[in-house]
Image (cartoon, rainbow, N blue to C red; front, side, top):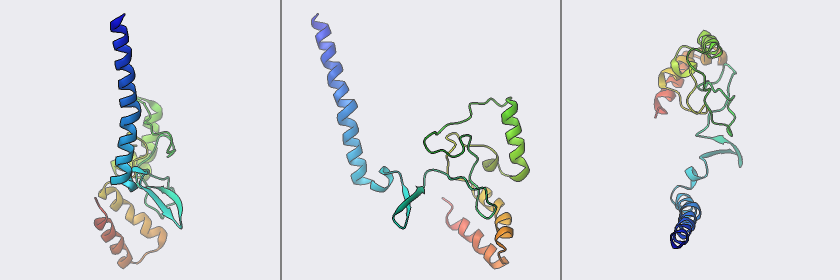
Length: 154
């Protein structure tokens, strides 16, 4: 009986320590040291939240850079992959359809989370021709777009 009491006390102590105190401490430290990141790296326009730097948004208009595809239609509350095998006919059809309009792997295959906002420099450069054509940019403006891609490549 004594071992049961000791076990229950240890269980309760560790539950409070790891389930309440540690999360509160880490949340406080995160908010103090990294307030922007701890709050979700939210982007604002005129005081209103318009998105997060960490979540891709769906762009289908040809005048914008397209993100990696998402299996959940860019729903931020559901970060999931497709769970489809490489032999799945639905997945193969989706990939073949994407290959008609896109040339680089980043733009053909979804990321693991389905919400990854990052694309490779090659994928960004591959889209410049489409964007320049849609926006009717001059060759000088095209060069500026390429320079911006180089400047903001992580």
